[in-house]
Length: 223
Image 1 (tube, rainbow, N blue to C red):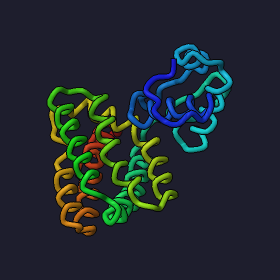
Image 2: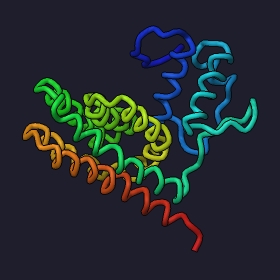
Image 3: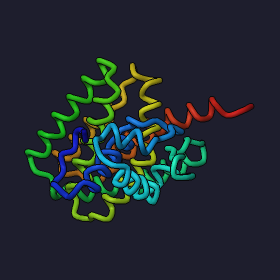
Image 4: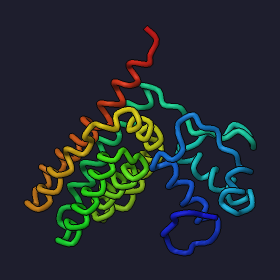
């Protein structure tokens, strides 16, 4: 059956796409993992057709690579690809957060604090799935608050390509505090300080998974 899909009823194809997209963006599927259309269809309780359609959409977004009908992979992460994705995230995400400031209400701040509490608990317990979900929820609660929908869509595409490797990194540094910038972000929102929020999100990206990823990939390169 299709799990954890909370969107509107947009038809079977959209539901399958949303589920696979969620699995990739939260790192449920790892880099260089080969996907089976037949296996996914059986797992989700659907025919192979909506799965193929979903994978085609995800391929267009750079989330998977289709080599043949039976060979679909999540691309491996390289230093060059990682740096490219990180650069794009740093260009788009701090700006989206800053644009959200005038649109965030007190209840939004309460929601961000609740998400951040869940994220901290996930780090304490080493729950990678909960961490990935909470981190995603925190960032997109910000980005979706601003009115530039194309900007949010572009960021979502970046997360589709970044998410699988982010999950790998979390598994290697599960005792590290990875949300030190989130509290600064919340304080910036409360102060209506768009520049401070922009800086907090940039720091979260560059000094969190960004720095860890650069170190990890550098350590695996041949000398």
